[in-house]
Image 1 (spheres, rainbow over the protein chains, first blue to last red):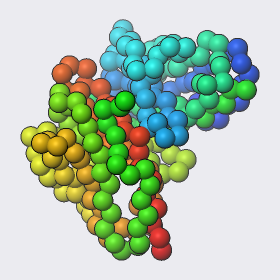
Image 2 (tube, rainbow over the protein chains, first blue to last red):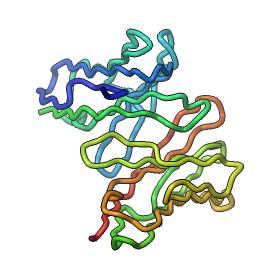
Image 3 (cartoon, one colour):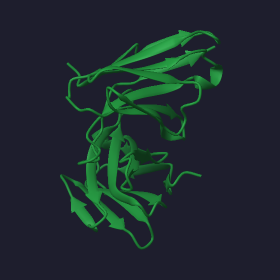
Image 4 (cartoon, one colour):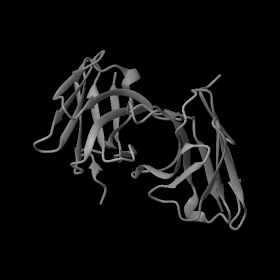
Length: 113
Length: 113
């Protein structure tokens, strides 16, 4: 089984719909992250969480919200999806205090029509 | 603009040759630099890292060089193989407190058989 699991892997939705992307990890790390990847723009941080009671905005948090349900679970929500949120979304976990290694999921490709 | 950027967005090399992928950074507070490899359809995977108090670090077929004077980072891949074809991202860690990673835009490496 993968260390970081994202669901769904692919989703097509319409403008205005609410979408939730889910992430679970078995690495045992406290820190979890949501990144967005667009062609030519690399990975941009949306939100991150250092533990269950801690949520922090990243570089591009507008239009997104997150929930840290447990140490192993971190979900990303788009309350009202818009077409420019079409992208590939990655969840990651890792101990970036002691290393630079993040463990990424396989990604969730979201298309907003 | 982004503080972590790449000089070449694409790189094509002959199988067996050495590859060099470059990255520039601008955040003087960055204390840790990491290279990730992203194969098609997958999430990024950690390759190698280097702390800011080092100039060079070697792994298996890969070497990372850090030049703090000009804020430049490079990844060298020896004897490039078809399996090395991927997008490579450099990332820097904020050493000033958040320990977040900021990623560059990526370089696509294509290996010609």
